[in-house]
Figure 1 (cartoon, rainbow over the protein chains, first blue to last red):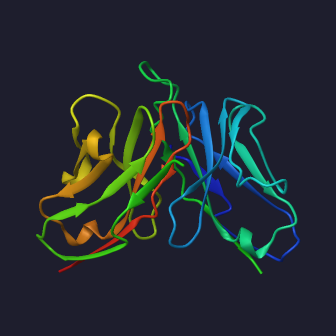
Figure 2: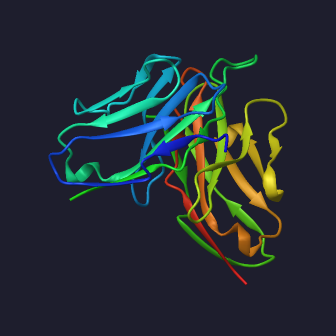
Figure 3: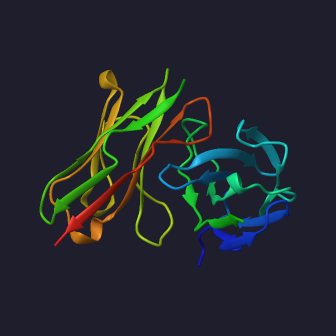
Length: 119
Length: 113
């Protein structure tokens, strides 16, 4: 399978614990995105990497959230001191380097997501 | 503020009926427009996209969408739906100056046999 993969697929944790999710993008994609999706809502943007550089962060990404992409390949999203409001599906997407035209051309390919439940 | 609105949250159709799902956005400047679909138990998949050129775009599985710039709309259509089209449909927009996709809340489509 050459699509975007995410691990774990499900995570149940107690309030106050730290959790870390991993995303492996499509191998030739240099752009990586994290989104959060709650029930009845569309995905909401969290952050964006181009190679290893984190270029954009949403105001949704509080101080308890941190994302890394150390070698420009896989990425991790860590949530510290989880709260019940963090319960959601966390989605990762990747897109290839633009081949021409608009620099923002970014057909994003999504992974299956990690469903987080905070008790 | 930039936003994406999907008018119908739940749609129920019989097989062979025609489908139109509304999407409006409020963005200044040039935009890129997308429709994604999420089948039950599966991840988001791209149905179709518009960047420039012909405002009528065709996607997979017989879907098409029309970009009407004057109405800030990008409605999704299919002439005849099938039971297998039962899914959640999301309209998404990104501006030419950004990389994040801004999604609507989605429309849940149920097609009955």
